[in-house]
Image 1: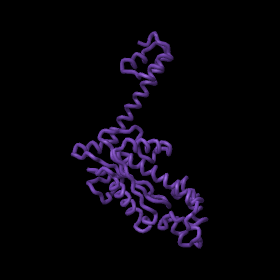
Image 2: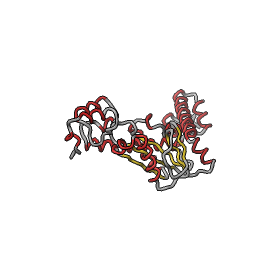
Image 3: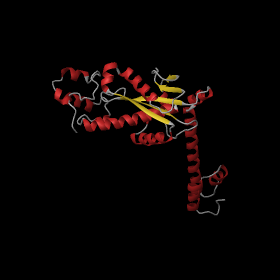
Image 4: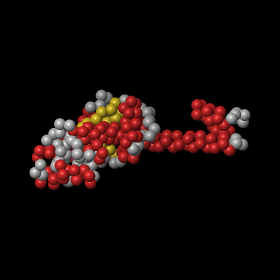
Length: 270
């Protein structure tokens, strides 16, 4: 097929039409080194696609098991923001139509911010239902971060416009849910729908922290998202805790107890 074709013609054909197994073998067996190299590139691309499909099948294994048990509407639930010194804890719940797999989905912690935002938009377009729960730093201080996280997860599930049959939740314990559920340690790295929920929760919370940075400048909330970086701890010591800092957390509590700067805690007009 390709023996009388110029290399440029072959490249255009591969880019627009792809290559079947027989055509790929012909490319790899062509006497021209440039054509064989093109065939090797096509083969590598196909192998990469196959690896990604296999990874996604493994990532969806628990969902397939639940579907075989009769559950049809399966929600994934994950949180973002348990560890920071400032801002809310956010949980997300996501449901997909059966059989939907999105390339590139993985644990949000392994993704760049730009890639998370791309996948966030894709998840929101393709999901059957998606919702978030947000629990403030004041409630975190009142009831502790574990209970606040459980509350955010429950809020996210209850906010779904579609009632799930079953929830897969990242972690080692379940919140109170309106349906059966299962807590899975590291589910954000091993369960597709939970990984999607983790991406949604992370991007949603990051955007909240960027907004809080505009309201409470000087702490760098947009850059570190409230985590205990050296610069953040120094800002707390210099400025005192803001209204969105978690007073019960080490690193904030000590400054709050000693602070003689109550005016610095008033809400910024910025």
